[in-house]
Image 1 (cartoon, rainbow, N blue to C red):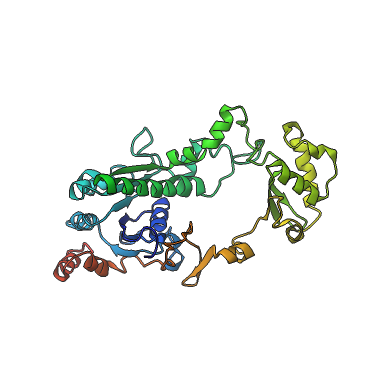
Image 2 (cartoon, one colour):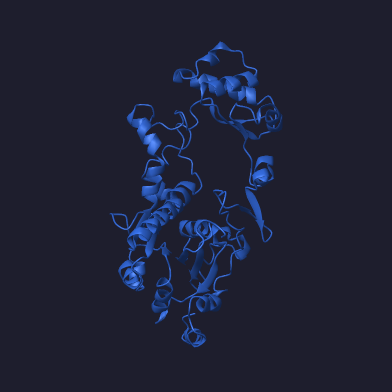
Length: 380
């Protein structure tokens, strides 16, 4: 067995961003995921060299022109044999293609139909265009990130696309698969990035309700307001990250910094935070990042260097855990999490769109003459 999802069969209607990331997660864990690509999909957006399309790893690809007569029936033949379908189009697109949930579930009653959108399948914004930054904006998450009196900081597309979108869809799909094994019935999983980003903010909403979180960014416990939870510049212009929340860790931080100022004894007094933060910034500027690493890394000061994209894969801890792997000459983050008994295999590199069309159709029960007919009709 290679991976805890070995034996799970997934059809992925290829889109951009969170859909492929979700499918990658399932494939990383051993599911057989086939990518239904469109001709010339993602032109101008995805890397020209498929080796660099990291989130497409571990799956075979077949290219189907969904606008051709007979295309929907071809996809339905695959869906009949699948446990899961994943799609990331705007609401209504799959229905117009003849592949909506009602049609698919009629052909495969135990199918888990995973839908990935930004705004969700219903609501006043459901049909509007958008991207990660828009979806996290209406949840409060974007407002909370950044410095006081400055614009919110764009947190890449981690919160909407990947955390609030792809990971929530993967979780929902696995939940629905487990339920379908008991009931024999499939269902639709409606994963909206707005819902997921809001859920990721659960702790902050609790803190705010308790009066422990301000609407003003950059002055709270976990948003850089606390002097003992943030980043500091070093003498060489590089940065370190400090997360000494608990009193014993805070004491260790102050000890290793060589600070004897009694003002630092008042860790929890927010009125002192700006002054203490300024003082800590002065201290960290007295040494290079590597010098601080030599003094603090591995201690209970809750310290780490802020590494760039080149440095992170080379860090001793990441190397020891094989957090990054080489796939066809390209550095990839390794599959996560780890499993003691059903460890997944190393991911295969991404297939070019359509590279596996005939092989996949053959493996999924299409006869040679059917494949030839589909090719002649322009479906594949």
